Image (tube, rainbow, N blue to C red; front, side, top):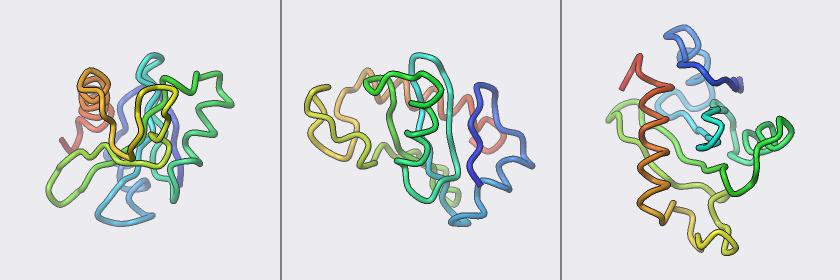
Amino acid sequence: MILTQSTPFTSQQIDQLKEQFEVYIKTVIDIEKKICSAGMDRHFEGERILLEQGSHQSDIWGGGIDLETKEIDYNSFVNIRPQDNNTKNEIQSEEIKKKYKELTEYFFKEIL
C-alpha cells in the first residue's frame, strides 16, 4: 500500500506501509513541499505520484527506513540525476541528505 501525505504517519498507517517488506519501508520525499510517499515496491512509483501532484524532479529524493535498526538510508535509483549533481544511488549532497533525514524523522516520528 502506498500512502502519500504531508502529515506524520500514524501507527496504523505505518503498519500498512510495512506490509510490502515487513522490516523496511521505501520512501520518496519532496524536500521542498514536505510531502512523503511511502510503502511502494519500487521508488519510481512514489516518484510518479509526487510528480503527478506537481512536485519538481529536482526536489524528489528516495530512500527508506530499516524498521529493525531504525536506520534511515538514502539509496534509490530515483536519486541518480547527473543534472542535479547526483551521479549515484545515494544522495550525495549533505544538505539534501540532512533535509531528507529531518523529514523522515518528522513523517515517522511514531517509530523513530
